[in-house]
Every structure is written in structure tokens, then in C-alpha cells.
Image (cartoon, rainbow, N blue to C red; front, side, top):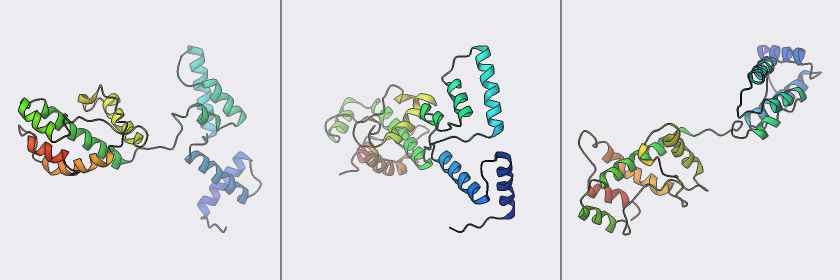
Length: 222
């Protein structure tokens, strides 16, 4: 394939060739750089500059001298650097090296769901028995509760909810939940959030969600 590069980028490639001595031509250098970039972007390997290597080795010396106990296997990383086995840390520390990132739209959705259920559940705790029975009658005979998300098919949403509550200490009402509904809930929760949104604008400052509004939100699939 034909590839056009400006002079500034070509100069950087030439400098990389001179410093690393790993290729004999610009074409070979470009192939190697593309391979390095794709490996790093896919989480299959890490790429360290000479400065990164030196910094790590000095930190490793400090860690070992102070006998600091940690989760990172510094000797494995050091051997990976010495041997050029840059794939090894990604295998050994998969929780650190990955290409997953939460989508902002998913975070917004989970926050909206937790916010909605906070209003619904806290309101139900203040209802008279006859009002609770009215809600149960409209909800298959039991009081509704936030169940979480499906651990198999909605694990990304479940992970966001878990992180918000357990790690960021938000929405403390759900602190003791495991967030695994064991069945898909995202579709229904989206429809519930759509029904809740216009109601949410008028809540707060002493104004609470009504029994009728809760029933309307729960009845989105009817």
C-alpha cells in the first residue's frame, strides 16, 4: 500500500531508526512501529521507552531495598524488560493491561437507574400498608426493588454500578447489594428511566414521588 508522510514525521522515524537500530529501512521501521502501536492499543503488549525502563529499574531497586510488599511482580516485569518479553506483563496482570473503558453513555444510564431506584425505594418505605399493597398489586404481588444487572450479558453495567457504590461510596442505599440480577434488566430499566425523567424534574425540596407515579413507572411494559 502507498503511504504519504510529512517531513516532520519522517524525521521522527529516522531518529527512531538511529536510536533503536532495529530496522535497516524506513519501510521496515514503519512496519515495526505499526506493529508496536497495534499491540499496545489492543492490550496485547506494552511499549516502554528507554526512560521508562530506567525509571522502572530504579523503582524496583527501591522496592526491593525497602522490602515493600505489593501486588506487582517487579521481578517478572524486570525479566520481561531484559528479555524483550513485553507481552508477559499483559498476561500476568490482565486487570491492569486491557483495552476496556466505560462508555460515558453507560455511566450516565447507570447513574440514572440508581437515582430512580433511590427515589422509588425510599418513598416506599414511608408508605402506609394499604399504599404498599396497591403497589404490590400492580407489580406481580411484591414490592419492587433494584435487582442490579445481568452478570452474564450486562456485566459492563453491573461493573459500573458496583464501582459507583462500593468504591466511590455513592448511592449508599445499595451498599449491601451484589448487583447481579441473574436476568437481563437493562432494557426494562431504560424504559423506566424514560418514564421517570419527566417526573424527576419536579422532585426534591419536599416533593416526593407519588404512588401513582411509581405504578406508572413500573407499568412501562404493559
